[in-house]
Image (tube, rainbow, N blue to C red; front, side):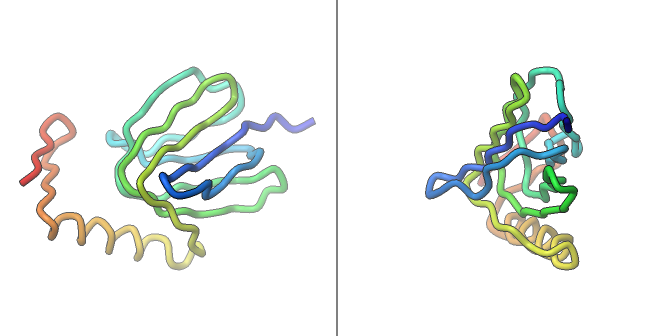
Length: 119
């Protein structure tokens, strides 16, 4: 039997993804990190970036998410973000780059993880 974790990607409007997966890679504010079966419990801030999921069948799924949070506990990963959209692998890096550019234009400056300033 495969060792799978339950993943939910939630926005205020809907459930973007729910399923059993082999792994999930998340865009943490101090760098991306991967969660596998029996990962230690944690809560992490997320930044605009991509989520990569390898589902129970070995398929790769990609999502672009806004800032938010992720909780890992008892082989359940809950991702809470303002927005999340699924994209094809070929599009994902371009979309992430564009979203980050739009955030910078809108007045958000992140020079350092410890120093986040809003105008």
